Length: 630
Image (tube, rainbow, N blue to C red; front, side):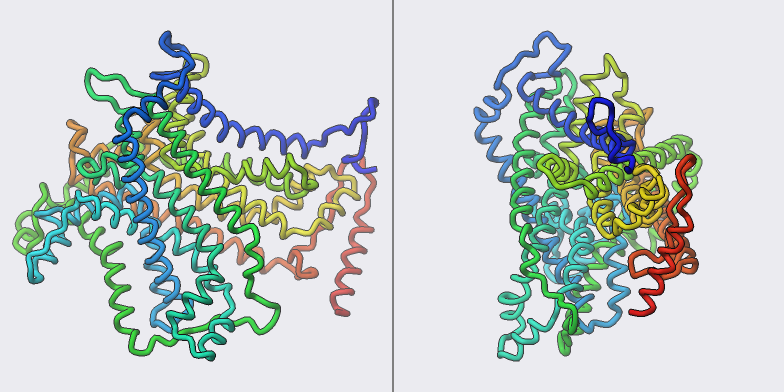
């Protein structure tokens, strides 16, 4: 009888060590997601300040009544947020779909280069991109407005208008939907489109009646996730929306808890707003799940004859390449140039060759490199990003394995959905909920304002690691673990010595992604960080914000943004390069085995268990002979 089947004297199944590890991982994820949201809901009904430890706290619906009494403000926030997030989502999806279509389904030149250039902005931290766009669009010294003045009509873009802010948000979010749409287009069989073309349909008709219906589930999922991502983003509203974007939800929430002199923060009202938008994102997430549950009906890849259609651009090649150049100009070239120009000039001035010769200086880079707080905040950034990515990946991988290898019940289905639900929580709501949680427990567990609090908050994106770990576990056949159990290994040891090494490439790839997201994060620490625990993104914002008074130094802030971007780029690609080298090394050492795993796995021998290595080795030889016969 295997260890999984051993029973206690009372006749009950004794939980295995693997089951205990799964329960612990599930508890960690529950604490990361459920407790902060529960505290936010309680605060909404026990305002106006903190729900506990305050004499004025009492159970009531006063905060929601206040929301409804301020109808004009309520509907203004709903409308402005819908226009801002919805408009930026539509624009970013349109640009991402067009770029993905060009790189995957056309014969456009330099397609590989285009795909790399589209991904480059993903490496730039969001607060850096927002700052770069603000510098680029400055009415007097912005390089883009300088270029536009060369055209007839004296056109100038107002950087603080609502339309400009929406377009900037769309540009900052293009890479995310692009990375998700590319594999969808790559895996779509082009024979259906060819059939439509042979039947006389034009390319627009084929796109509307064949391509988009086939891609609908995947595109809907991308749209929902992009919408949630935009709803939780604070960088663009904070830098651009102080005049025209006061009613955008993220900025509204920030202003409610950032009280001015002589005012108290309105935590209860902010929590009520958070509950309203959490319901909206939950509905969007449920709609996505229902729309994509039968996505396999639209599967177009068959076992043979699969080939993607390559559209010949013909006379459209030059216009398409011009549009791509304009996109790269707006998302990479001009923003980075604006940052560099701001870093080498002592105050905002328009670019000219005279200013280049007489006004430029490079002392800001030396000042940044000689600033001890820069290195301290950089160290905190690396610690927070690395620790949070590790916690999320370990807990998510263990839970994903436990659920994937367990019989599907109502409990496991609910836990699977719950572990996947953090994608439905916008960052601004997660940051505020974590802030409330640490404020409530601070008298007992003093975590508020510490690095540990930021590590816990950053780990809330656990569903990224969970979904990747779950999918990777399903690709590993259970015969490997069964062989280990037959050899006497416990389920936990089988997981540690057999499954975990096979999952490691996927886990490490996800860890790199979450690490880069952590180094770029601004919204979460904006709610949680203090001067003693702030990461580099928050310190950099203090350098570029006029409200920071003593810390305000825009040239050093721009220089710091460039240095920060180079560091994130080097760390991210350095880690990916290390993973690639490791994968190449493993591939050289592997021997193909039935197309399941390229590494022959011999079941481990547990002390005190019978030695069955000879039997296992004979099984491997039999499998190889069977493969050779096939």
